[in-house]
Amino acid sequence: MRICVYGAGAIGGHIAGRLARGGADVSLVARGAHLAAIQSNGLTVQAHDGTHHSRPKASADPRELGPQDAVIVTVKAPALPDVAASIAPLLKSDTAVAFVMNGIPWWYFLGHAGPHRDMRLPAVDPGGALEKAVGLPRTIGGVVYSASEVVSPGVVHSEHGNIRVILGEPDGRISDRAKAISAVLEAGGMPSPVTPEIRLEVWAKLLGNLGNGPICVLTRRGVRDSFADPLLRDAARRSAQEAQAIAAALGVTLPDSHVARVAGANMAHKPSILQDLELGRPMEIESLFATPLHLARLTGTPTPQLDLLVALAKQAARAAGLYPEIT
Image 1 (tube, rainbow, N blue to C red):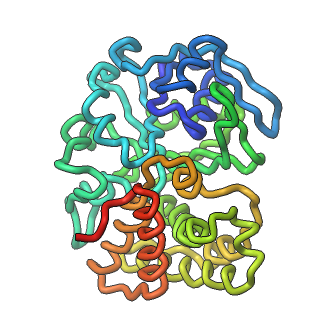
Image 2: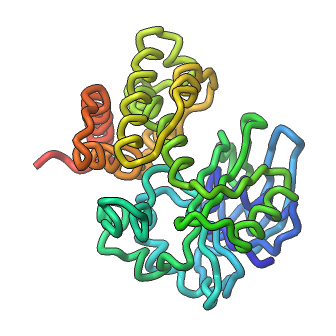
Image 3: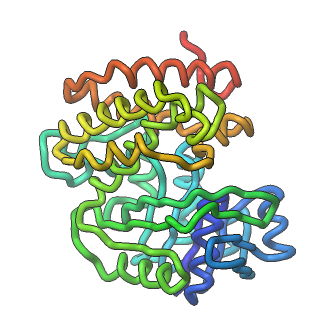
């Protein structure tokens, strides 16, 4: 199975390493020093089950990689317009494209039953570029849990064994194409359940992103260090409860155990949005923070704490030149 990972950073690199270990013909779209190192020395993934080395084909130009059976998009949300502009050479008529990312996905309401059916989200798909370039029929939703970091060019370190990639069709089918990608990942040592409720999984991950992301951006510390203050741990719980309420207003019921998981988090890992702030990279504020709050306003869901924390996190991003100033 020919699978291209588009965006081989920490998460994409880990997924690519697992796909190669599972027997796929893997290629990567990457850039910079990370790309150069992979081209010269291959890709190394340091994980709980050992160190895995592979030699995938890698390029900054999808035209050099050719048509694929599947593409797994793992870029950060601000890079999606670039994906839309350049993904075409990777696509055959039946190529599946799995968007394995954080935040509210561009396809969330397309074909979805309910009062907001087919509503577009221009903040996460400006101009409908992804819908035009990829389209809903090709699209598979994805959620990833993998505390990973690029520790040096070509080398990805995964902090612990609680890893998984959850895949699901937007229309709720358990499709052969999703099962095929899942089988390769699982053969490579990464659990990959296929779910009929991918939107529920999107919100389950978002509870953590909203619970710890704004707080860690403001403290500039990882989850464990931030939550050492009981007041901040309680604030994370309240943020997760507000996110739970937004999901419920959209018809997604998350059990209270998901909120408890966020409040009980004890990992040293820094959320990716904090890593981006520290490294001066574009931050996923729109998909992780702003769009969920837009949906809160759309559904009339009160989110007073998230409103404040996200406003402060935006100011921290503005101070670093990573978010537009208020005009």
